[in-house]
Amino acid sequence: MISEKAHVDPSAVIGKNVQIYPFAYVDKNVEIGDNSVIMPFASIMSGTRIGKDCRIYQGAIVGAEPQDFRWKGDDTFCYIGDRCVIREHVIINRGIHAEGGTSIGDDTFICAETHIGHDCHIAGHSVIGNGVTFAGGVEVGKYVILSSNAVLHEGSKVGDWCFVKGGCRINGNVPPYIIVAHNPVAYYGVNAQVMRKEGQKYGFTDERIDDIAKAYRHIYQSGTSVFNALQRVEADVDSSPERDNIVKFIRDNNLKIVAIPVDLE
Image (cartoon, rainbow, N blue to C red; front, top):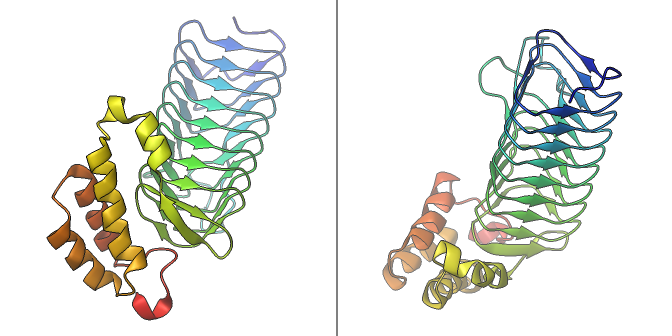
């Protein structure tokens, strides 16, 4: 299942039933899980760990050297989970330090020409649109949709079940379950349509979605500070995994979230 016209370093660890097509490049210090497929002209660079049942398409570079002057040539890592799809000409940089690294969680679909910088972490089960750009150290939660040509600046965080519309520039923290759009970025409501579609599988009842919407009315539409809004959320919205996730995300990020006027932060 490995073409004679592919370059596979002898030290690479290749799982069962892996297909490596002609002109693919697999570097030293690489591991590829069972049933994965490496298409022609894809490059899997040193320090990359690819899970099972992944598909890496033409021209993708996984585990590329980080584009950061803090990297001093150490052996660093890039971790790809199971059942990930990485489409044409995607570039994923590995980390800049020996510990940690870049990580892409299970069941993530990354569309063509996306660039994911060093030490980014995508929790998994997400869709990354065409041409999305991640700077270093970005964190993305589970079940996130990033539409085409979104830009995520260094250190930004996106919570679970968010929908970032095409072309958005994210320079901050996007709390869970919401839609953001435009430039500068604006709150565009709760991601209710996607949550209802997946509701039976993940427990998003209409009541829970209504509670999420109520929480964000306090945060984004009450005209009060984020600190006061969280007090109101805790008093007015029944405790649930979703409410607690919202409150924890905002508090963990020092009350700094996108689309809040400076005088209300």
